[in-house]
Each structure stands twice: as structure tokens, then as C-alpha cells.
Image 1 (tube, helix red, strand yellow):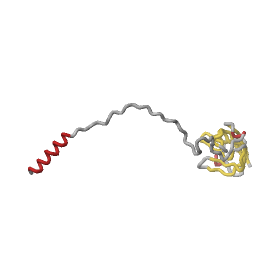
Image 2 (spheres, helix red, strand yellow):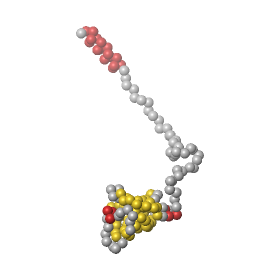
Image 3 (cartoon, one colour):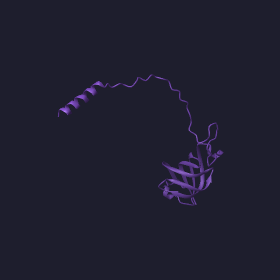
Length: 141
């Protein structure tokens, strides 16, 4: 027991003799960081990725009206695909605010649009080849 007490006191004396030093104070040194741009192309080149759909005069404006034949309707996605691109537009996206009407003036729904139907869509260009429709008029077959 005396050996353990002696060992404990020795360890305690050692620990008391140790002092904790704080890290040296950091002096504020200005750091100069050059801005850089992440690029997939080698430095010094002005290359930009090519779009699979080059811009045309028709897709440079922000609003557009197109008339085309429906190829397919994706009800859950609220998207209409045209059989042939019209003025560079192949896809018509609908929002909850999109108004649909028959040529006769009656109110239509997305379910009324079927493949082979002729439609006229007006709206804003969303992305290449896509219009986000504000109004769609069902013109018939």
C-alpha cells in the first residue's frame, strides 16, 4: 500500500510540475488568393461547351407562339412533345397556371390533348427547344 501511495504522490508531483502552454499567438498576415474559374478546358483557351442545339433566330427571343402536331402527352410530367420541331421548339411544358382552351372557346384540360392533335402554344422559352406555356389552344386534328 505504501508503494502505491508513494507512486501516486510521485505522479501527482510530476503532473503539478508540468505546465500547459498555450499555442503561440498568430499574427495577422494578409493572404493573397487569386480568383480562378473551374473549367474543363486547358488554361488559356477561351473554349465554351457546345450546345447540342445551336441558337437560332427563333429561339433568341423570350416569348414565342408555336403551332404544331402533338406526338405524345406526358400527363404526370405535364409535358407535350411535338411530332416535328416548330421554330426550334420540340417540347411544351405546362405549369399549374397554363390555360387550355378548345378552338370553339370551351375550357380544355391536359387529358383532352391527344397524339395527332394540332395545338397552338404561347409562352416563354424555358430552355433550348422548350417553351413554358401560358396558353394552349386545341385546334383539332
